[in-house]
Image (cartoon, rainbow, N blue to C red; front, top):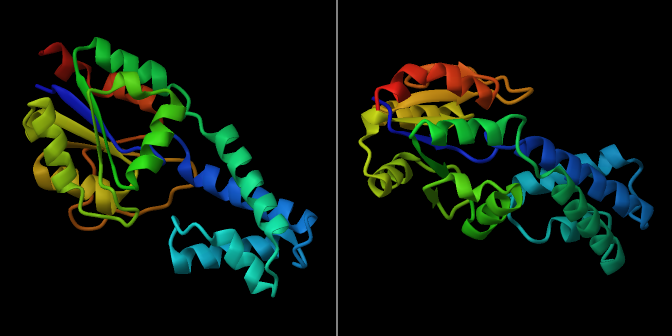
Length: 229
């Protein structure tokens, strides 16, 4: 009997990867227009990606560091990049197709719903609220760290808050190592959502019970379980 479905957030409920890539590209384009002496947007973008990789995705000085890498300290160029980044981010922050309809169907079937995600608390809450999905969920558990963490403690906390044992819950996520492996380890029903362009290969303990490419598939995947309730 399935009583709850928990979801990862980034690249499961919306395309975090597409948003980030597009926003960074547009930031670099705006910085070039403002005077950044890069040979091309692509050059600046690749340099920015390297900076993000070295300093972490939540470093507040990505655009400052990009400017400094070209020997400049220009508030105008930095702010131009920051504005373009945030404009693109807000424009692209919307759920994957069929997300709202799928969550509504699961909720109407009597299932408790939750979000379990890694990330900084305020940043993850901003995404949830801007996506306008908060009202679907009975619990939201956020790690507080941008670094990949063992999700088992987070999943256990969500299950305690919902008063549902692991064997009666599913977890939907895109990452094999942090999402699927954790769900399998706890005895949950693991459902891997494959976002566009994903090419991960499962390792030991990372094989999902189910694989989907749209959240709309959940309705046909779990109906016999929901009817038992």
